[in-house]
Length: 374
Image (tube, rainbow, N blue to C red; front, top):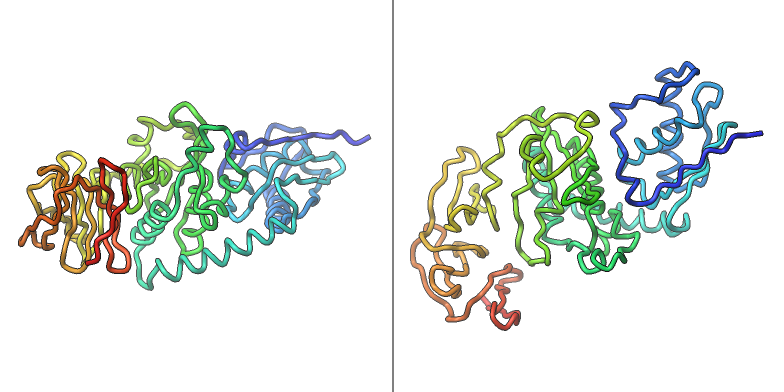
């Protein structure tokens, strides 16, 4: 009689997955070779990518009790795997997979995701970009185009889509897993080595990414860089390219299961609020004093643009449009060189973004969204 081993993995338990490269099977009386592990792993990946309901493994060499570890690693290493919801492994060498949706639905959603990934790469990744530029571009795209599914999270009513790349790239609303899978999916497609990390933050299950730039690993928590509630046009960099020591302040994870990030090379990003990149410069509001600065991308030379407190701003052509918190939060504009400053209104205004030659901003008092044709 076959001994049935059931591994029912709920969404929160899916977060216990670990990368393939640190795989170690549980102690067993069987002798398991690397090639046998790899064959089982490859079969599992192929089946899960195609949303197939079953596959096989060599039960004479690999215990059915070890299959759960291999499957978890397959899911962690392949962000294209979606809607997986557990398995039943049998001692006769068969694995039956469970999903949160029908195969036809999953494959159709995956098709839409793949098309959207191609579009995002085409519009945001240019030939000759460095790995840093690729990571920043996709980080910014996700923060600007996706909102955290906060209301449903509070109601404990988050949909299955919000845990997947589909939620981020198609529905544009997700929780942390959606950000993490989307980041890994897109960056891996453009040649940036990316790992999905699972752990705990703020007392709850959480996920984020590690990326490899110039031979060094860094943590990127895109979820925590997206303001909640959502603020259109606003991107934070507090959790962009952090090292292990920095992230450990408020994140916990099994550090033995992932690479150690030691570099502080990109610490300058962490003080940037609402940064805009233009003409080889980073224009940003410094989180320490809220003043507007610019930094040369190559030399990293920092120069103060304006003495006003500027928590919100946007750039169009040679003009910076900003909320002047040194004068009532009124809407102002100033040239990129900090000259020709001019007040536009006498309303406490929160600048959001510019699109199609229109500045979108909000009356902070009434919460009414306003527009200004530039």
